Amino acid sequence: MSDVKEQAEKLDGWELDGEKLKKTYKFDKYLDGIKFVSKLGVYAESVQHHPGVKINHTNVTITWTTFSKKELTEKDVAGAKATDNVLKA
Image 1 (tube, helix red, strand yellow):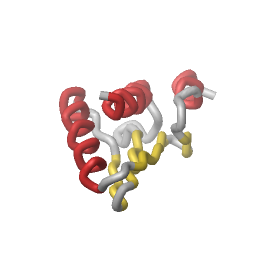
Image 2 (cartoon, helix red, strand yellow):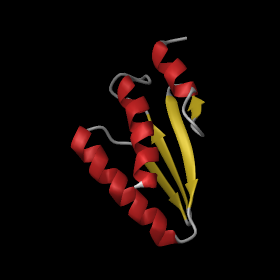
Image 3 (tube, one colour):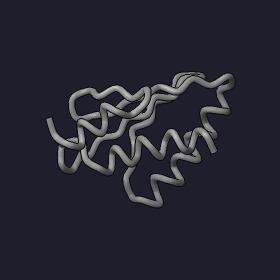
Image 4 (tube, helix red, strand yellow):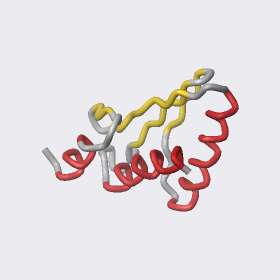
């Protein structure tokens, strides 16, 4: 197993699905999830690495992977950590 995947497996609440990291966040209100995604978008633009985002009412699922390399990279692990930090901010 690669070092990146070993790091990914240590992330709290993140699911390693092949070459993707996924996590679903649950919010009390729809607009809380929208605000979270907006804040995450600012981070993603700043590093030019963007997650997949699925919004289902009060559940927001974030998926990190590096499409250009077709594998999980350090950028994805950093993105997952940053996503958790955005939630805490």
